[in-house]
Amino acid sequence: MANEERINKIIDELTLFDDDLMSRVFDKNIEATEYVLQIILGRKIKVVSVKGQENFKNPVTNGRNITLDVHAEEEDGQEIDIEVQGGAEGAHIRRARFHSSMTDARMLKKKQKFRDLKDSYVIFIYKHDKFGKGLPVYHINRHIEETGELFSDGSHIIYVNGKYKGDDEVGRLIRDFHQSEAEKIENKALADGVKHFKETKGGRKLMCEAVEKYAQEVAEEREKKAEKRGEKRGEKRGEKRGISRGEILKIIKITVKKVQKGYTMETVAEDLEESVDTLRPIYEAVEKAVKENGKIIRSSARRPESDIYSEITPTNSYDACLITVLHDGKPRKTAGRWNPTADDLMADDWTVITE
Image 1 (cartoon, one colour):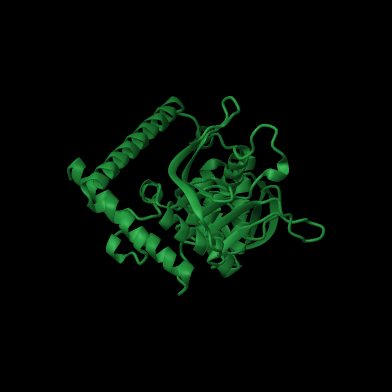
Image 2: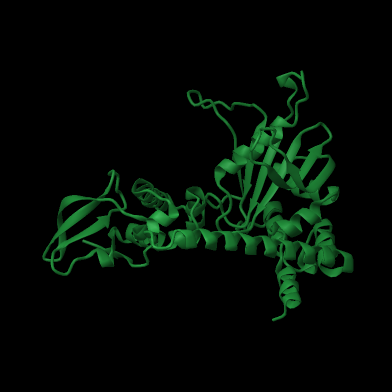
């Protein structure tokens, strides 16, 4: 398939969960922005300005900068950052904290009083259910731990569940975000925006340029990663990734705990800042073990000449995993500890046994 055809196919499949399209649809589009915010915030809102892909520079030398998908300002000065997360891995929860702090830092001028600081909102519209609880919206606010009272400092973080299918305003909004064709989008302001960037000559040209730029950035990033892999060829897999045994064990143990709490693989991967592909083998094994009240082991860890193998129980709370001794093929007692390596984490031979 020619490069132009590939680009056009990508554009045809884009939805509002893709930040390149979403930020352009909302840029200077006050009507669409007010519609989305009124549903998410549950109140009437008057937006006076809205920009897509706005850069916030960190005043600290060598500090990390951010680019907001959509930056809106209300008539009373409250600022709102709207981010979409279409990938399975999503964004680490500390990203919300960083976005919130960067927004706050820009809101006060020199010698202004702290009480003049307006409320700020950081809203993540996820394609999946970030917390796996099936709720349409999750509001993150600070509380006083000892009393349970709300600590009203004016900082608001909100996550929207992109898998929510309720027959209400949030459900209809999410359905619109999932549509790749303008005529299937219910809200007119959103539909008109998508139509412009997909079906008009000028809008389509902008999207082609955006997709080409993104493809180039991805290619350059892959090239850098390939160079790094080449530099470290011959080292152990875990050493390549720079992950210590303690970190590997922590990843496995946290996976066990989060599976028990019903977290999705995408959410666990995101919280651990690991790729879904890396986490998949261990997550699927843990999930099966929890359901079957079993233990997870590596098939290759079994030694045919002996009855010793390594295991992790779903309720593991040790500093290392257990080495189990078998009697007549059944686990009877523990013989020691096992510290897993990066090879263990990424192995594809995890399996489940039940007593």
